Image (cartoon, rainbow, N blue to C red; front, side):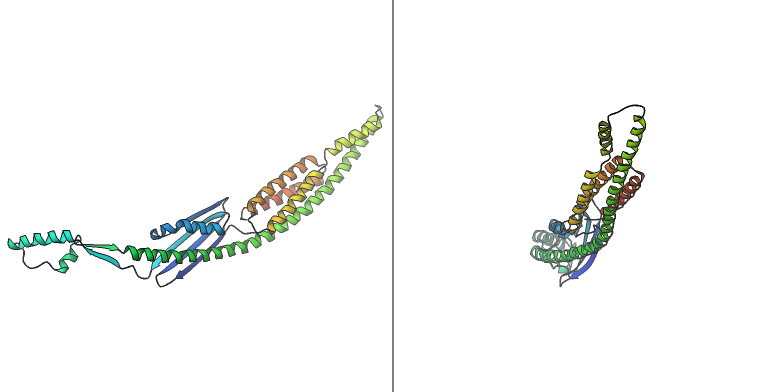
Length: 296
């Protein structure tokens, strides 16, 4: 199954604690490159979220962005700074005895003095909220990854339609090349035979030796091995396209091998028709190479 490396997914999920937004973007990349952006309070979840995406994806640059909006902030812990307040009261008592101030120290006074009260987030509540929020985020990312994968599969179906059509075209081209090369080799043998017969009128030669040399020269343009290998590459391509595992990098390798076979055919085979067909085949291979850059 072919999957595209490009895709997008975005969703929002919520519970009684918070609303979580997840956005996934995927583009082409030679390897798998996962970028994760989460709120600071969920930094500890980054590793597990990265591993989750790696289970779904094999290649591509993937950007995960998570936003969190809490419905109600956790209740803080308020603690009286006993030592500071005691010393503050003693100082005010001295000031009162000396007639500098009057009245008593009130709760409002403590609230207005920053050092008197220590306000901190409840560790137990924060830990429980973070754990619950991490579970909500992971579930949302799992769902988004599934949606991203579905989109990549749909795009992969379009890629396969195009690549299959080009593969069939190449299969037809290689058969035409083989036929044109056979004709070219036969024409070469005929030309050599005619030329040798012309020369033999002036210079006597052993007919058997001459015939053997003509066959040897013509054999240099034989492309049977290259054609067989090219057919094997096309068959291998079809089996890879039907497999479940990612095949983009394998396609890339096969295209390199097919291009190598076509270059060898172009340098060995004789005939103008072969040259034209080889140029057409190389153009198709280049189009396939560009398209394969989108395959996971």
